[in-house]
Image (cartoon, rainbow, N blue to C red):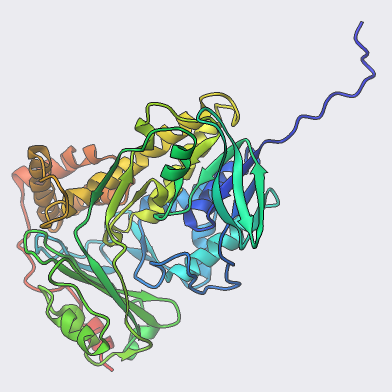
Amino acid sequence: MPDRSAPLPIRRRPTAVVVGAGAAGLFAAAALAEFADVTLVERDRLPQGPEPRRGVPQALHAHLLWSGGGAAFDELLPGVVDEAVARGARLAHIMGDMVSRAPNEVWFRRFTTTRHHNLVCSRPLLDHVLTARVLADPRISLREDTAAVGLAGSATVVTGLRVRTGDRDETLRADLVVDASGRGSRAPLWLRRLGLPQVAEREVNAGVRYATRLYKAPGGTAATAFPLVNVQANPAKAPGRAGIIVPIEHGRWIVTLSGSRGGEPSDDAQEFVEFALGLDDPVIGTLLRDAEPLGDVVTSRSTANQRRYYEKMPAWPDGFVVLGDAVAGYNPVYGHGLSVAAQCALAVRDTLRDRDIAAPGTARRLQRAAARPVGAAWDLAVGQDIFYPGASDTPPTVAERLLARYVDRCVETAAGNPRALGALLDVMSLSEPPSRLFSADMLRPMLLGPRMPRLAAAPLRAEEWEGARP
């Protein structure tokens, strides 16, 4: 007879290690905390407030969070979008609070009938809100000033992460290791060292350079909700040049300009406004002529679309997953990186609700689940950027050309029809699959009309022009 008086064995709570405390790592930690004790490994020291840090090279440029990303934020961290708004962020209605010119040179009308918003603020503010919220969870701990140097284990199972803190090396044992270290991920090298083959990769690089400058919001715009102003580049006109004004907290504008090969903006402050005036429409330069700059021009070239197809590897070790920009990084002009990071973390959480974190085959399922939101954003970005000269070693396929033409028709239809705009934004915001573009909401106005005439100029209202005067 068994001894019923003997104490039952205590089941150990699983452990997970996440590489990188950027947005992707924070979301991964939030998703995993439901199933494991999580250690975040970060090579930098995180700032104590909403300040830029070295590990987020795009932090000073303009950022937008689409509706699909905002919904994923709130599902992982309930109420976090409202927390950001309380700290100074803004939910800007698309298109009511936006003045936007599409790549095919069509101005969108400012319909207010869609359900979509952009969360608008500086990236340091958003990162600070996310970090504070995630690290408040007692199941999540942070190791700062600690570099990930490799994986422990074999080609069949990863058992931990090798790290270096100062001059001390150690191995953090874990049931699951997640690489969320961003574009500079060394996961391909780590996997080869375990005996696995090279992961298949693809790059589509439009050669875009970004230049950003911060301005004091001129005139009366500091106290009012000035619209976002966006002039998108036309890939059919090389070089493609674009610009955006994003009003953010503390009465400031982030202004980001971009140009592809042969038309890149420089870091010369004297040329910044002239570049904006030279866009296909000069509205951004006109608004900046008398605005007061608050700092120097900062530039970045880390804008290529890069994807690693881990989900297609012939073999995959248990105990290891790659997420976020470490899987796919996008041209920042599309504003999808943060949304995809959150949606990938949600895919991990939902998969683990049906699978044990340490069960054989779980890691492979997690990697494949995370690939689904990656694929949707990838197709949207590459569908535009592949048409820039020199963007890819292979020219656009017939299917890519046909799809691009159809999307152009969708954009032109949506610019003058609110139902079509809603369908377009459902896809652009990563809220619905691309098949939404073939719904009746899009096809009916595309085929039958009526269509409103094209706008001849940026739809800024008279009071907005007046408010932007110094």
